[in-house]
Length: 547
Ligand code: HEM
Ligand SMILES: [Cu+2]
Image (tube, rainbow, N blue to C red; front, side):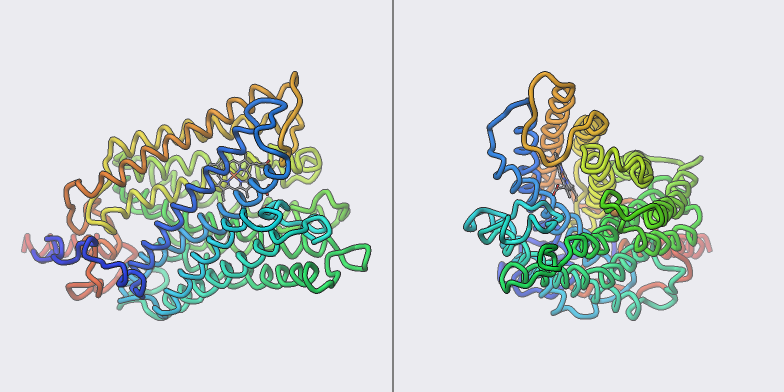
């Protein structure tokens, strides 16, 4: 590796970025960082809403929060975590990494890229701002099922602002998805065929294509609901000839594949991290790449497993049950290939690796309970109970959020030129891992003991008290873990600088300086002849050195 590439690039210190240059930037790296920082702030707010929910449920017969306010809290918490945190922070990683990993100068449409960020920010301001709307924020749940979401039962502007915010966020995601798809299809460097792309790129490509397929369905549904509320149409009003089940089908045709939009890039991060910290090539590159497409495809065929209790009958229920079971096959391929990569590896348990291993263990629990509720006779018992709340937090927090933390610790040195502190990182991981399981494992038992979701209190003397108390303690431990992370980030500006490739990794982003210059590359890119171009380059350099 040429000497000048090792020294950190002068005049690239982020402190020199003036506010205006950030406000007007079209650079994919800066837009990526704007997405990540904004999503983390939105995560903090949605996490605080969750703490209020847990405080209200910590003991029976609480009146710390009124029923109406409680309904607003879980509605905005759930909506924010999905649309303001997980989906956009993954767009942030994609924005920062896709051009660097495929050897491009920027995204295909830089200005459209900037626009999608500002739509995202505006959507977030509208959603959180809706708490101050007439009648308060939406309290119809993140699923906004009519007739509850119709103006008869949800007067005021809360639901209208919820719809406006989701329209802005959908536009933002759709613009981003088109940008990712065009960039990955057309801007890969010399030699980088599809079967030589990093697995994270496969994941972001699938994330983008899924969004393009499902977001128009959500936009259409939101518009019809707005018409019902504002123009007096009756699309979802059964008494007037409409259908409440139409909304449920429209919402979940989008909503279920949306969970794969939230997990596949996190899986992609794990597929990048595990081979680097196990010092072994990934086991079954092609199988993992195609299982990403397999999950997306099968995931489009299962949406009505959310409607098992509406009375569709054995035929339809059985189809959606079997289709839901099928998703486990490509998911299992990923899990087994990661374990095969770890097998006999020379593993170093740095923080990115700990979070990656955390994702595997927690997602397996979330996936297995998903199989339970995919069996519709079982779901008839557990639908809308805390068992379901526990299930999707194991997949969305234990899965997506743990993957996102792995990515933050792994790519932080590339983005900011310094590694986050390992001791604080490990403390963050173990506190989060313990807090998470204490918060959500007891919720499985609450569900089995019949506790419905979305209730703001419960009576004294039942079996639910201890589990709720434990769950609340767990939620506060998770909050403490996030404080440790914030301290690590704030102190990181004083840590030592690192070179291009602090982890001795495999993919092209580590060929650039840390952080990369505005034009990304300071030297001609190597010809890509495998999914591990940087490793190939290291070997070639070693061979020439040995002559
Ligand atoms: C930060 C830690 C978190 C805690 C303590 C937490 C806690 C909770 C609780 C207790 C509920 C149930 C409210 C009820 O039914 O009455 C809930 C609902 C929900 N959470 Fe979380 N959550 C957290 C993170 C997340 C994350 C990362 C996601 C991922 C996207 C998420 C998505 C949701 C959704 C979609 C709902 C359903 C809201 C509804 O019923 O409309 N949560 N959360
Ligand atoms: Cu589903």
